[in-house]
Image (cartoon, rainbow, N blue to C red; front, side):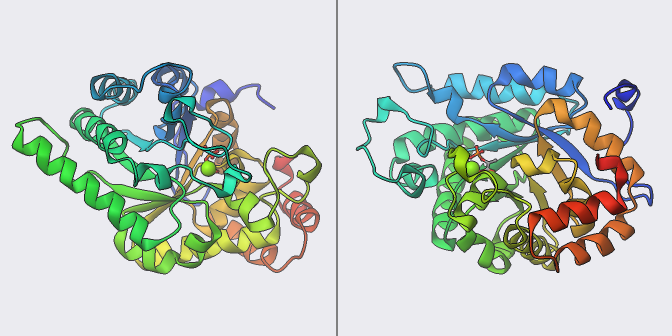
Amino acid sequence: RREGLGALLDAESVSSDGVHVELAANIGSPDDAAGARAAGAEGIGLFRTEFLYMGRDSLPTEEEQFAAYKKAAEAFKPGAPIVIRTMDIGGDKELPLLDLPKEDNPFLGYRAIRISLDRHDLFKTQLRAILRASAHGNVKVMFPMIATLAEFRAAKALLMGCRDELVAEGIAVGDGVEVGIMIEVPGAAMMADRFAREVDFFSIGTNDLTQYTMAADRMNEKLTALGDPMQPAVLRLIERVIRAAEAEGKWVGMCGEMAGQPHAVPLLLGLGLQEFSMSANAVLEARALIRQLSKQEMAALAAEALDLDSPQAIRELVEARVPAVL
Ligand code: PEP
Ligand code: MG
């Protein structure tokens, strides 16, 4: 299947009926950015910044983080979107440095934005570094694990405060930096219409959205069938989120594993997803697939899929209509 994909390196990510989407990469280190571009990614849809904090004995400074974010941005063409997610510590990603109490249910615990909103020292250092990097590229800020409007508003207020401070200090920041959230908590998906009024974009994190929707630990190998993003319940939430964003004219991407899965791509295109962020090595295959698909036909396919009642039935439908996914 991968043969001949190299020819698509500089091809557009466009459906057969002329709808453009963006194919971006997920990275965990600035050193991954150049490789992601070489693999065909048009930008970064998810920079997992927590990896900058892990495996060391002091917290990364503002300067270190600034250099990391700037490096990621500069690996791409000027203007390429670079979505930097603020740190998502907790869950399966431990940070002994913070000396957090051990929890019985870390995935339902003190993680990500919940920590950031308590630890302004840590959070503001990161926000300042991201804002400084925004003077060097099309950098966007994304908050992980948002569950409530209040969390988003508090995080955004801290971001705006940092921006004012930087401006007062005479330090360059980009204009109109977009601020978005991950949709990975079902409660946020249900409130997507309200969030859509206030955010600039959504990125659907199907890894966590699936585990929380299906109550199936994403690390538990016995639960892989249950924790399948093609579960109709997950698909329905995804549709809800996309419609909510559309109603407010905001863009929607996805940065969970699902975004690069061949069976999912036709449905996501049909539902109106605009940005697909995945492991860099999945980009060319996704581009090849999208170029063969009609967005209009996929919209009809997605509508049918949303009526089915199991991942198996949904996959069979996709295979019957889009044999290229096999
Ligand atoms: C997700 O939850 O889908 C996601 C992209 O974030 P992470 O895998 O880093 O939790
Ligand atoms: Mg997640």
